Length: 448
Image 1 (spheres, one colour):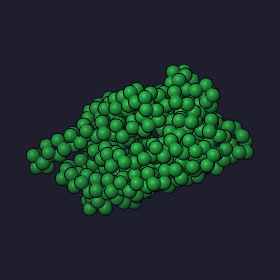
Image 2 (cartoon, helix red, strand yellow):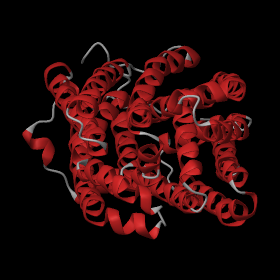
Image 3 (cartoon, one colour):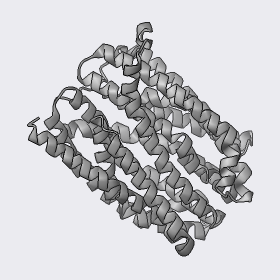
Image 4 (tube, one colour):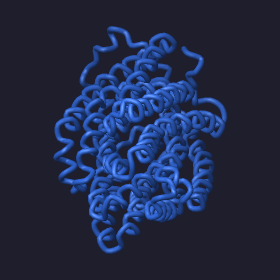
């Protein structure tokens, strides 16, 4: 077994979770920096109109591509459980199942994105002046989703076995490649908006090649053998019943983002650009909270496989203290320095964009503690193999975000749009909190 694989069933839960989370934070920030770099370079070198064109596709990318991220996170829960149970043959067979299901779904996603991007953007009432740029960007990115799907499933398999360091290294190298290629494609080759998309795809394709070469050479427990590809329907279903609900959760959450984007499109390119840039700032800020949640999924899955249930309760309590404390600090930071962060994207020549962005970061920054709890409860339940309640929470998130978009944006304008995310977080957190404490109570009654 590779030295970087981490057994999370022994030792201090807080220490294990923290040291698993730290490289995971860096890795997730690097993952999100792809979008951040695209937005930064496009906004600086191609202007606000191009920034709005790329920005208005964010929710569509989330809808069509984000389901792959949720899918692989769900699939690899089984891998982590098998690892915790010391069933190494099961780990290899699970890895093979993860690859098969991921590639099947990503090919379908690529087909939808490549052939229906324009129709979807038109239905979203995308402003005419940014439509062509938006189509050019999203068609390339989503059409090549099998490429980054291999990258994501490889890194999630490593994380399921307790290795969060190597995925971070691979993501960092891929990001650096992306920055070099995007600067080259935009400034030297002058490929415009499609150049930003191609830089992302090429860099993630190289990252996927590196991840799987590392797995093949250095992680024997994940080195899939010929016999591992032979799997029955029951074994595949064990993975699909966790993977598809998590993909569905991401998709239905993204539908709410699409509805909100439609409402924003009616406010004009300045509002679209402001919201897009503010979300990029926020995405980086949220990565540590998301990373704590992902760490809890890996920690819970391994301890559930090892039948060490009391450690799960202990780990959740300690993780809540760490993540909520961070959420309060980063929320205050965004409130105080929001204007300066927004100016990174558009400079000082677009005061209305900066003003709108500050409004958004203030409204959401005060609610980050709710999101911190949401990530922990959702991922812990998923690590236990539960999929129904997290899906219900996703539906609640859709209802709340869409409801705010439909009811408040028309009358309150951009202020209404800023309330969509906090409302969605509260709506999703309620069923997750109830389900988590019910599950813990049931475990306690059984004295396990």
